[in-house]
Length: 296
Image (cartoon, rainbow, N blue to C red; front, side, top):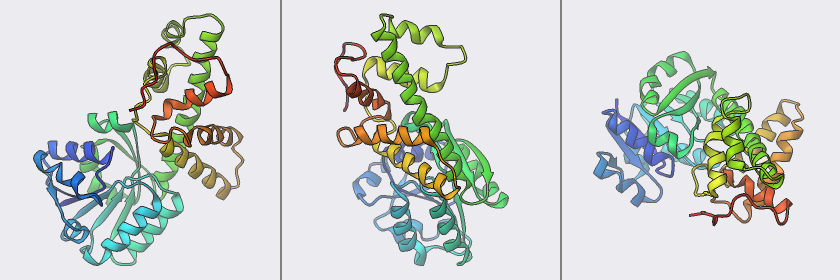
């Protein structure tokens, strides 16, 4: 299968490496050509232009910053796409945007799936991403083996449903990050050892991947980006947009979005576990641990 991968960023680069390790031939393109060229040593084929990247491809994978960027790249690529191509967008966009991309390609005899991911850079490097796919059963069958090289794919419904599943994931992640930060700061402020408290509650009902990974990050004050604050904030806004469209009020999600907004101006590139920093700003004089902040 001739695969084209568009978007060689924090997530795209390790995802391409997983595909290459699985034996796929991958043509890569990025708006900053140097990022694509850097993957040549791993066996990828850098393309100088978008048209060169997608021309002849049977499967196009995009991993881009926002819905409008996906729309721009998809529209620019259309003249070079072959009939019957399957475009799998693994970016995080709005459900309505994914449905628009699906309609845009369907009307030209092409196919579309949205397949956003969760698991951060670590999951991309390990090939353990949670991949939430929205599309037809036939299109999913075409892409399943390729997606499985990057993680654990699940078909969750028609086009646009992958983005809904990702929003549900990010709602839980975003809120849990703040709850873990509050629990650890409370432990320290009340005189307990926060590291020991974290260890004590591991394995109980309060345990989670967030407590395991990001709880440790908070204790170490390691805010070097895996998933960025600005990305989490974008996801929170998309969640609220979807809720309004569905006629729902999500008060906790609104509050979490406000907390990320409070820190995004100062630490947009930091890991989203920097929710701790926003909490500390609300509590002058309280600081988890004694080490320096690691932000880069």
